[in-house]
Each structure stands twice: as structure tokens, then as C-alpha cells.
Image: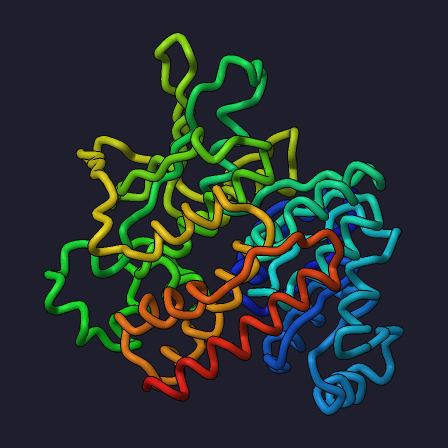
Length: 385
Ligand code: MG
């Protein structure tokens, strides 16, 4: 029985993880849950899964939950200390890291330092601190297993293969809700339209990132660190059906692909059971019903952020930190309806343009660049929009 801690239990990945565990109760026990402010859902999760410790973002919410479970031996904490206590607990067998954005970095680092399996859904932490996380994992013996469907696909294609024989890795992108929208119409796209993803049910940040293709850009950088690929070995292909998640081209011309239904429960379960497998919790893939699988090149005009991400991938150093920070601030402003859809890319380009490359070795270096870039991006939004 593996003890599982979930950071971000009320988000999409957290809920899907609990759904997988609900089907495999013989194998997993939920010992800790960290949530944001969705106290109603957290309360339900506590009643069903009976964790030993939970954490919330705010003190008031923690007090509310503590009152609801007075008679139980539940430990309730809050804030960064709470989530770090949960992530860094050496009693965990698996930590599912599913807090969105840079906020997931410190808890992920704590989990990696504790030396256990980290099922990583928080791609931003790998993007901004890939080098640091890898070094820490080497020291502690932690295993970082991707939850992102494309990276789970790569991991599965690489199994048993000699890395020297791999020529190229391609991550697929659905193209998001605006793949077939005319370029002139893009300007008018609303928050609701950007959030209506045709294939995946995901959180707001990643859904907007899918519409701009920044999500794929971040995933390229994530892949670079997860699997130690060179920038030139990584590629993206648009695949609207989202059935093929990754393609690995071998030097003899064979291409391996990983296919599965478009549902995060598949890669989540693989991360939890890795390197073993358990029975599926979903109906099997029905290719005859799907009929056709299409592939298209990425149109740079439609997705200008992908080029910026490729630049950050090649540049290394602080470039990815700067790009990630600018993007988080721009997406937040779009979701708050302060800027339009096309302005996301405009703002990120302007912010990153003025960025001076520097070496980022420690967590403080990274957080420094992150903070400066956030200020800069907010200023650009204030001045221009
Ligand atoms: Mg993905």
C-alpha cells in the first residue's frame, strides 16, 4: 500500500488523482491533501479519503476545517508552511505535485528533497528550475515521474530503448479552441471562448496556455529537463484529436507513438503505478470510432508564443524563468478581463524583450528573476492597456 500526498487536491489533476485512487484502493492510501480555498470540496475529500493531515491556503479556511473535524485526529495546517510540511514529509511514498504556476515550485522542491516519488503535474517548476530539481533528485534519490500526458507518452515510448538510438521527440498539441479560427477573428476572442477547450478538461491557466500554445512551449522546456534532450531534438506537431500524445523517432527510421483516450486519468494512473501498471478506470480507446488522426505543422503566425518558448529553450539560464513569469502575469490579466486574447502574446514579448540573461543556480536566483519579471510585466500592462 503506497502512501500518497496530493498537493492541489481540489484542482483538476487532484480530483482526477482521487478518482484513480478510488478505483485502486487496495494499492493506495491518501495520507495528506493540500488545497487552495475550495473548503467545501476539501471537506468531502477528507470524509471520503480520511487523510492524516490537510493544508489550506488561508488561516480562516484552516480554522473552518478544523472545527468541522474536531472529534477526528486530523491535523490541519495552512499557508506555505503547511504545504511544505506535507510535500516534504519523509513518510510519503508518492507526492502528486499539482499546484499551478510558480506557487508549486517550493512544495515540489521539498518533495524532491525528501527523496520519494514525485508525480509531477506542475510543469512550471520544471520549466523554471529544471536544472536545480534534477540536481536535488540526484542527491536525494527522488524519482520525478511526469503526469503531463505528452511526457508520460515520451516516458512510455522510451522504456527499454537505448537513449543513443533516439533521434527526435515530438510532443503533440491539440491546437486549442482557436486552431481553425481566422487570424482576424482571434482579436475578439473572450475568456469564455478561450476556456472552451475542444478536447481536454483542465484548469484555467493551462487551458488559456493551450489556446496560445504557450502550454506546448512550456512542455518543450519541461521535456528538456525531464529527459535530458537537447533543444534540437524536440519538436511539436498539431494533432487536433489528442489521441497520440508523443512520438519518438529512432535513428533507424522507426517512430514509436503512445496513444490513449484524451483523459488525464491515464497519465495520472501511470505516474502512480510506475513502473508497474494497473487496470484502466476508463473504457478502452476505440480507434474505429475516432476514424481519422490528423497532424499539422505549427503555424507560427497563429501561435507567436511558441517561437519565444523555443528561444527560451535554446537560451537556457534565466530565459525560461522570465518567460514563465511574464506569461503567468499576462494570463492572469486576460482571465481578469484586463487585456484581450492577442495581448497575452504582445505583453509577454514586450516583457521578455528587455530581459537580461543571467545564471540562475539557486532557488533564490530563480525567485529573484521571477519577481522582477512579474513587476515588469505588470508595469507593461498598466502602461499599455
Ligand atoms: Mg500536456
